[in-house]
Length: 215
Picture 1 (cartoon, one colour):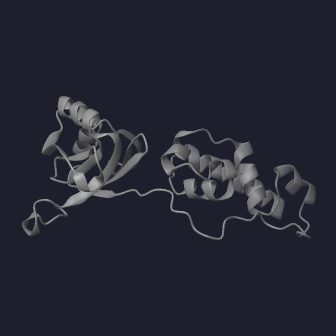
Picture 2 (tube, rainbow, N blue to C red; picture 1 turned 180 degrees about the vertical axis):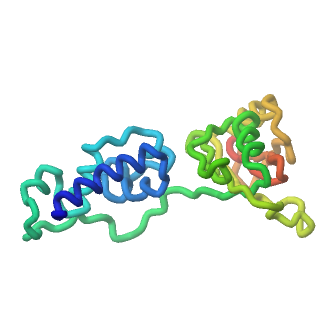
Picture 3 (cartoon, one colour; picture 1 turned 180 degrees about the horizontal axis):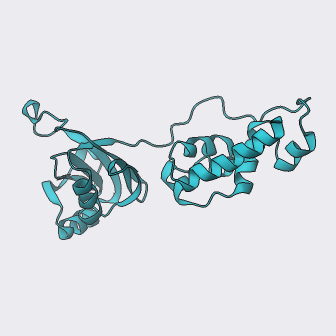
């Protein structure tokens, strides 16, 4: 198989991986396409990804700006083209806390119904791993055989902390949804004037803190 034919097959493979929901392809897309650099994995997987996008990805990875330029080169070795340059300093884009649960389906339902998250993807049949998202917040759920937290060492261990634009409004919403409140909304002066937080518990006792404005 020629090099060019192999690259064409790779482009089709990337499209297939995206369509099948294979999450690792998101990092490949983000690292090679400028317009996708600031998107999260969930946003990349939820959006369209066409063959033309995959071909542009391959072209940029091979040091060309366009697929047409790559095709024009054919199977000849690259001459003076240089790969696209990227910032030398790494940029941290986001964090995705992993929450360990003993019943994935139960946790998935709770995060959707009580906390207002939607499922971005699941993995396994039946699912044992997945990600739930709400606006810019992303939480990964991982099923384990037994509770991962030893609550005997402390009953206030947070599994995740989420910053929200208005903690008071979210508190009222989640309270109405039936979320289990471990700590009601209270002012937190160390966060700044007019700031506060509250804590919810999931069915496995994992504690999620939400903090932000309270006025």
